[in-house]
Image 1 (cartoon, rainbow, N blue to C red):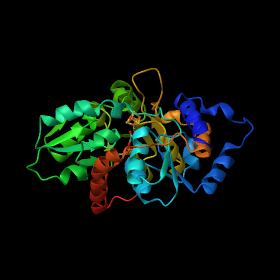
Image 2: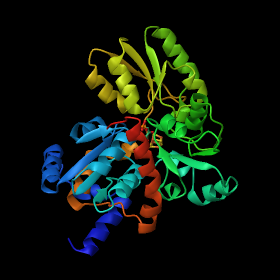
Image 3: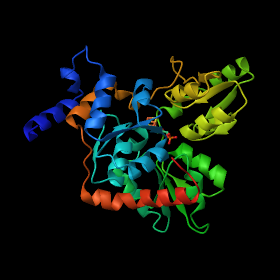
Image 4: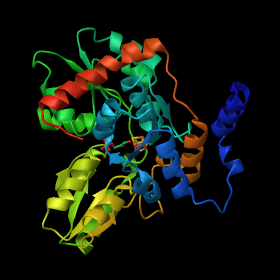
Length: 337
Ligand code: 13P
Ligand code: SF4
């Protein structure tokens, strides 16, 4: 395909129009599997993806597992069924591979809540502090970061920093507050939050717990502290999944994006999983960014190898060190994908 056609396709995909040329009778699942082989591609999917995408993926995981896989794969093309910062992280870890994201508009409210130029000014006020950033941030923010972390390894990352060092934590104030409680470290927090985890309803969850007295309430640390205080278990998506597999309980109320319920139900078909309700009229909580990816867009991304994630060399060079540091700490602490 010549560059002009590629560019036109890229523009269409950016506007969300790339699905114009899909034959409705096509068996998308079979075609995607064919493309995967033909192109030596690997599909990495986050737990918040639609179940049909999860079922097609070579690896499904949380942010840490996905980074570990992206760093280790020998595939030529990484197809990232997730959001933009995840695909950027994969590109930083595998800069010579092609990384495609089915929908370039699949962003993240948490990453958007911390623009790098503003953070740069903020950081200047604390010149001797170590900057720890949650991986849910832009590649540019990673260039201003000393160590990255995910919700799986955040405690280990904070504990790896000498006690006499001050810490700035960005961008999630809820995860930051949870880490202050867990580690006893005093940290300066950036005032960011995730639009999905911030809207769980305390009142509705309490009522749900009263109606299901045997159910265990489990929550993601991106939730606000008054929600986390109700939880019997707090952890990343993969840690929540593990908890539901190992627990003797039969019922769970789950406070995170509803996509995770698919793997929970597959792993424990005899258990009941109830999504925790948000403070709007919906019964469960979906991330509009994660859910931008569809099977059609996945197919087109693989066929045209677009939209591709491209990063400046400087960003890769300066942004990667904080991810490598995180992976080293995770390996030492025994976190495996
Ligand atoms: P984890 O899957 O790493 O827990 O992250 C949750 C999340 O919000 C990803 O966007
Ligand atoms: Fe970002 Fe929240 Fe969506 Fe995760 S769930 S991608 S943190 S907006």
